[in-house]
Length: 189
View 1: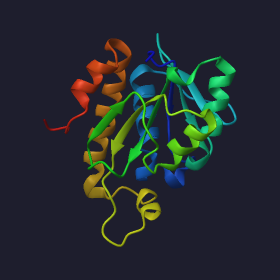
View 2 (view 1 turned 120 degrees about the vertical axis):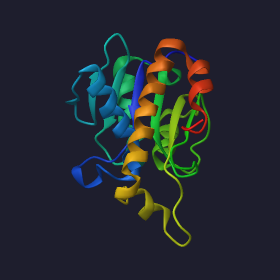
View 3 (view 1 turned 45 degrees about the vertical axis):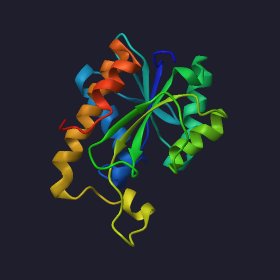
View 4 (view 1 turned 120 degrees about the horizontal axis):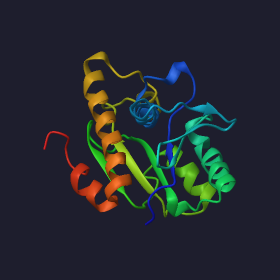
């Protein structure tokens, strides 16, 4: 697995979705941009930046279930392959605060990952999933991921997003295995 040349951070465009669980990928993108002093520039299907001495980073400017279109267009424009991609997204199958970095895998029911897999015709790309917890009994998953993060969980969500940014930084500097060993565990361990 190559070191990522593209980091695709998933979310939904617009202020309406800014603080929803489904925008956890965008939170990480914004932290990485703030920490490195780069700014995103709108490029149609995505907002893009280049991290210092590192990869391109994008936030698709399309809705989550169409993320593959933006990711595929960026990869094609740069001549990058799928194995040079890292996708960052939320995961309702992981408890709140958990991170899981893998070098490939299925979409696991996540529509953004499904769209990327369908567009690239492969599951062979890295992904960092941020645990957002699951909906309460009877609550629809689509409603849950589009709900604003409750105020009582904002700090925990922020800590998780910052740890995810740290995970990405470690992955870029020391490789996938080192980042997995450090971050594929509960945040308090």
